[in-house]
Amino acid sequence: MSRFLSKDFLSGVMFITFGLTAMYFGGHLALGTPVRMGPGYVPHKLACIMLFLGGIISLVPLFLTARRTEKEAIWLPVGVAAILFIPAVHYLAPQFASPPPWLAQLAGDWFQLIATAELVALFLVSVLISVLGTARAEPGVEVDLVEAPKWKPITMVTIGIVAFALLFESTGLIPALIALILISSLGGEEFKLLEVIGNIVVLTILCIIVFKVGLGMNIYVLRGVW
Image 1: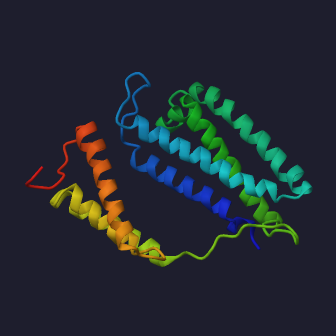
Image 2 (image 1 turned 180 degrees about the vertical axis):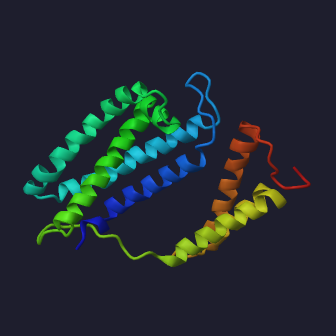
Image 3 (image 1 turned 180 degrees about the horizontal axis):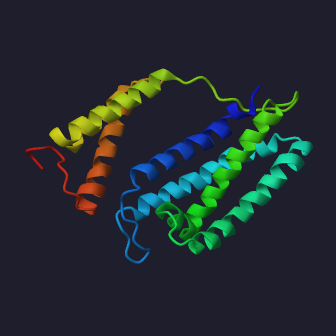
């Protein structure tokens, strides 16, 4: 069975996808500095963290299931190339007369640079493994394969999130939370009304204390009332 279908590898790819998506949609926001943070500073750093973690999570299962010959032929040179990629971009990019903005930003951000080096290594390893025909696990090597998606919880949770977004602005926090928790609970194997009501009460109280009272956010708890 293909090593690219393991739970760990696909989990890492999911992290990478979320990180790249966040970086793309937040690319127009000003970053600022650690002292004077712009609106895009925290989203950018979180996206880099997701890329960094995703790279590690994806690389580890491929490495652990690799044969010794594969490690010598693929992993060693790719690892050396990834390590050299970091100082090369950091020190050589500023030498260009007018480097592209994305390259200048990449060269000046060590964390993003390390995450990018991981992604480059993951891409090279994946391509070389596929080319050399070692993507399939050897007999006797256990691969924790991903399971088929469970569409019921995925569908109900998605509907719950959409209902929350639609009700939050029009009716307030409490009706939106009730819809979110109630609809999402229908996606589970068991539906116990008393547990659902308890979750609604506890989460509603916590959200009011944290967001409305503690942070003082300008949101409606119940439109027209509070």
